[in-house]
Image 1: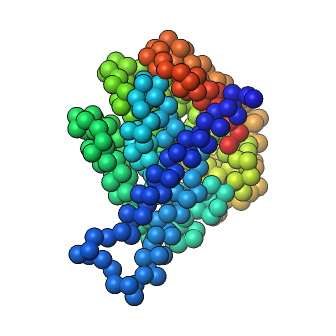
Image 2 (image 1 turned 60 degrees about the horizontal axis):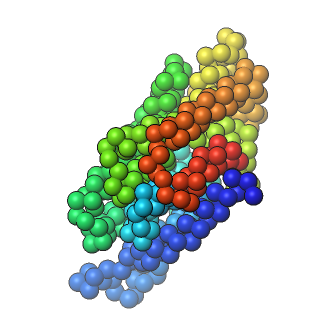
Image 3 (image 1 turned 90 degrees about the vertical axis):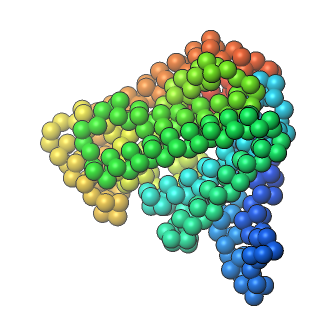
Length: 357
């Protein structure tokens, strides 16, 4: 079995452990105390609310982030059971963030089904995300009854730092997309990648697990540097797949990032290397809103990326950053030493680099 498929099995195993914990806590969304319970005649509204709020969590996903929490904690000798609240909160954070992200981008699909706002409309979809956001903090607060209070506080602060930096990354990305910036550099894009992927997807979950395991500040800083590099690779590959893949049949629309006007490494490379005549055509396409862009225009942009070498440039960068991440893991993250968890994290690096969806 390849390392890619071995790590898929790891993710599936942790999903089976974390999902029941999330499912139990989801019931709190409509479980009101006696003093503010809803009259039984309004039960259909409660049922509707629960169905809507639990939509994205029930679709699940890969469970990469909660798995990294659990793997990192166990790699430092910390028990699985006492890590579950943090891992569950991590997954719930993804579900509300993705819901709000899909509204902001007006995405068509999520995990092979219509995006939540396509089902319920923007207003109700925002409200569903708000409910999950509240639930995330509620689940995380369970650490105060199972962990040492100082440790629970450290986890709480790290979680705040991670989510807060992620939201900043979203602000920057939306602002630059709305402004239709044509002058961005790769350094600018890497700022977004550090916030939204390096910290949130890799470093944050691993730092949470390592904090549970008693990591020192220098060790946590090493994890952050590792996460930034692997996160760059992760997001560039994700953006490349958006241009070239259907995400294993889960995505109907190729070039979704171009429809959205999202600034990626490949688009910045194209803007900086395309000839002047075609650059004007490219700008005219990017100035259109999502509904005005045609599939032929999206195909033209992708074809220009191929001709100019933007896709190859992205592949080379992703490889470079993944190699740098691997070097940090091998030299500076030796404290993640307990087996089989260290080897499984290592397999996760290969999974991120070689994934097709």
